[in-house]
Image 1: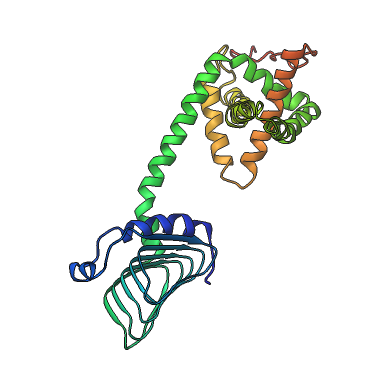
Image 2: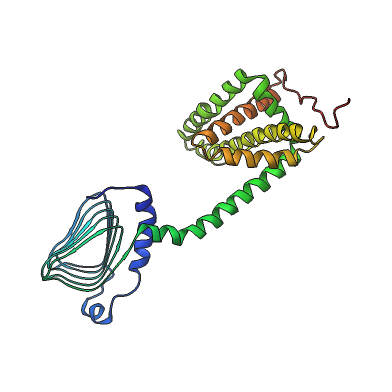
Length: 309
């Protein structure tokens, strides 16, 4: 079996199935007895014996050997061997095609795959699509989706900054004033919250709470944490560039900081570190607010006007 990659299995499988949707040529299609039979198999090689018919055969990360008849055969990350068989449409992505003598295939479509046909085989048509073509086709969609997610992230961040600007600044101040406590808070989020989810999910009664923590609470802590770091960075940039920051709602600081954090997050692990530190600071502030601990990270006095001469 050929090499396996996640992108090939996910992207190529969807494309391959889409390519298989068109109905084969009328002469070939009419010669098959359509019975709606479908077989889907993954990680285990499949053989369709001689004298057996399937309308659709789909195989993931495994090899398929067709000795009988099939309207459509799709093989993802594997070898498709057609030996003395009749196939309407054969689609192979990230694998290999081997059509032996005596086989009849109406159309073959390959994606990043090798292709071999014996001289005694009959193939109506063959076309090949390279990965670069697939990437070019999906690039505009990926860009639009990325821009949409980025816009939603920024808008959500500005809303939180407008509502809870003081809390975000207090969390940001904790990062530099209490690094030890923030580190403990980060460990609590990274280790404690997943442990809490597991404990809650043990019982049927706790499953809804576990889902709420996993789907709502944990992502919210990470988001607010990264936003706290963004505000801290934005305040520093504004203070250095124009000598003052916003007096109340740190909207500009949040916007500037989110841009900086977004750029830094391109570097592997940097985004995780930023979110972890911010989540630790947020957890620390939330703990003190909930359990009445001493707050040594009160919003610092920040220069909001021109520095007096």
